[in-house]
Image 1 (cartoon, rainbow, N blue to C red):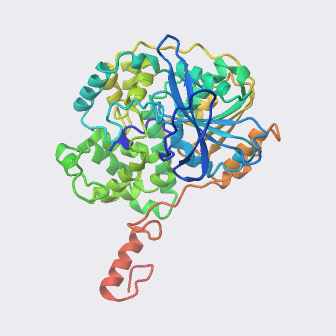
Image 2: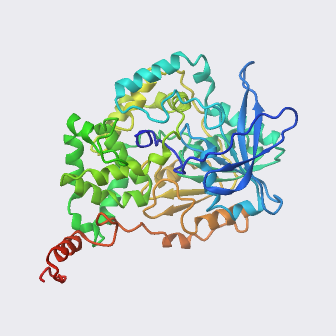
Length: 493
């Protein structure tokens, strides 16, 4: 269940696996490697970087998709989310962004503690326990055995490392694509190294000063938008008040249901009990992806009727993300830079009246109590004039469009596109890859976002086999199979 619990601010791309690059003495010399979901060879480097103190050096895994036409334009660096996801997880984004790769290198830098850069996962990334007490104990044991590593992993070090990689690869200036928490990293890089930067593409914006872990109200807003869209859809509307059924299910969830919840792949009870807070996070995770969100009304309706398999299927949709978060890195950054500035009063206000409640923050409150890193504050951002393309989904459950509108006044040259009904991370959808290409090329100062209106929500799931039938039609088909008689729209044979 780890993907459901620990989706956090991840970019949503599936984990890429490549043949591991080995360290090369002397000048940087790449070795060929491959990423899952991308067929062309990449160039892999091990880039040495230093820390603020002696003995804090490291080697970062860097993957480069070389430009097909010689790299005439500045490279695009891809910054992953989390905090705790590896940039090497994003290799498959080269598919929708392949036109960008024609004229510029695309670079993936695994930050310290993630992916191929000496991953710091506390041994729980593959299967984090859903019992909070057991998880808190594991985190405490991990911290106790980690020496000073937790205090050396932070956003400042990540940005310093990124700048060292830029120099090591001989790039004069770079552009940045950031997804989710990667947008926070990109914005900090813009603050600290503006002279190294050309342009930014920020998808699912986590502004420097926003407390993005306060996400319950945003998740509630995304679910309410799903409700409205469902009510306006003749297929989905037949499920009636499925939201009330969801609230009832979450409120009445007990240990018996937790231990009997079906495994999405076997149908047998899950080895790890699915506690109520885990189930609430599963709903939240589904809202990240419009295709998964389109299955929620059907899954909830079925659960209310005693069939939990569709809800288990939603949990299984995110199994490919298992292991994508390095827990040691995640807590080192999140506890020092996010949870340290969130008060109990703010948590109470954020959780009130929402389906999610405290479910998202519970593991962080418990975990950070056992991960005592000192708070790290950001300086107030200064005005910057780099061209910036902001991308938001109107139904994003964690980084809503309002973040880009309210919190980025210091960006003096930004454009903001919003995908109606879009979830978390939209760079690969519809015409957006072409808009990113146009933006990076600087072909026009103002982009025409008209084509974004053509991006629609996927059809709602209506039955076990997808969106083809309404519940009434499915019942009619069942009756026809039983009687051999044709059933008309009115329900009479």
